[in-house]
Image (tube, rainbow, N blue to C red; front, side):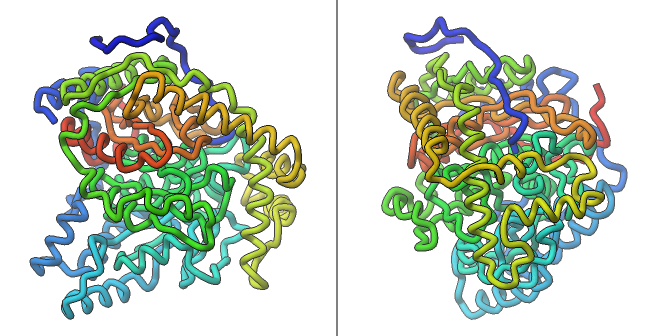
Length: 555
C-alpha cells in the first residue's frame, strides 16, 4: 500500500479489546475497485436469497430529495407517502420477514401528513423535511399519544409531558413522525450479557439483510427500519456505538455528532458526558439534511451553547464529491485485525480514497485506544444513576417510577417478563455508586477526557496533520443469541464516543451479504468536514444495496 511518510510505521497491528457491556454507527476506477470488497470474497459478493414473501416496494431507496420532487410534481402527497410507508410496515415489520423494528406507530401520523399537504397547497413549505416520514427511537420524548419507554415494561405507559427538543425540531421542520423504533432496552445498559435489539416491551429486532443475525444496538430498531425502507430517515441515540454500530450492521450512513451539536433534553439518558442523538439514513445527503434539523442551541441542555457559530445552518456546501482531494486521511490500524474479510474491505476503501485524491497516512493509530475502557464504564455507572434519576423526577406526578432503585425493584417483580434472558447487574452496580461529586468519579472522568482527547484523537490528528482518521466501524453482524448474549468481534466507536467528538459511518462492503461500514473520525466540531469526506467516499463507491431479508447466511 502506497502511503505518505509516517513516523509510526513500525507500530504493531492488533485487534482492539471490546467491552461486552455496551455497543450498541470520485472516480469510476475507485468504484470498480470496491466491487470485490462488497462481499469480502467472490462467493460473499453473491446476493443473498430474497424472503419468499417480500414484494416490490414503490419507494424503495427513495431519498429525501426524490420524495420532495414527488410532492412538488404532485405525483405524491405527504399523506400518500406516509400511507405507503405504513403499508410497508404491515408487510415487512409485523408480517413477512417480520423484522420487528417499530415498537409503536403514531396514531396521528396521517392527520399530520394532511396538515403538511394543506400547508404546501397554501404555498408554505417549511424546508427539506416538509412532509418527510421519519421514525425516532423509543427513548425520545413525544408529548402526544405515543409512549416513551426505553423499551422497558417499567415505562410502557409513560407519556412525556413535553416533546424532546429534537422532536420539537422535527415537527417545526414539517417532518411526519410515523412512529417509534425498538431498541436494546435502556440503551443496552442493564446487563453485561444483554442481546442487542431486545427489549421487554418490544421483543427482538432482526437484521433485514439476514434475519437470524443481529441488527446491533442500541438504535437497532432505527437501523433495521431505515435499512428496510420503512421510513425515509430515522433518529438514533449513542453513548458508545449505538448509532454507528447498527448503521454499519444494517448498511446505513450514521452520524454521531460532536457532543453539544444536538440537544439531549427530553431523551431518556445513559450518561451526559457521552450521550447524543444523531441521524441514520440510506445516504449521506439524507443524513446531513436530518442533522441540520436536529442541531441547535437549547436552553434545556447547556452543552449545546458551545455549538453556537460552529455548525452550518445546513450541510449542502459540505456535500462535495471532490472533498477527498487533498485531504490527509490516517488509517487507524490498531482497530484492524479482528476479521480478514473486514480488513480487505477496509484496504480497498482506503485505496478508493487514494484514487479520489486523498493523501493516505498508514498507520495513524490512536495509541490510547483500549486503555481507558474501565474508566469509561465507571463514568457511565455514576452518570447513569444521576441522569436517569433526574429524568424520572422531571416526568412529574404521573411518573410510573421515581428513581433507579424503583426500576430495580420493578424488574425483580416482573422477572418472568423482563429478565427472561439476562439480568440487571449494571443497574445494581450503578445504584451502588455515589454522587457525581465523588473523587472516584472525577478521577475516572479526567482519565477519559485526557486519553480520548489530548492523548488520543487530538494527538493522532496533530502528529500526522490529518483531516480525519478512518477505521472499520465494526464486523459483520453476529447470529442473535438470546441465551448467551452478544458477541462483538471488533469496532472503533469508543475514542470518539468518550471524547464527545464526531464520527460518520458509511457502507464499505459486504461479507457473505452482511454489511460492513467504515468510520470517519475527527476532532471537535469537525462534523461538516466528516460529512463532506463521507459524501465523497459514498459517491466514489456506491456500495449500499437494499436488504433482501435472507433467512440465514449461505456459506
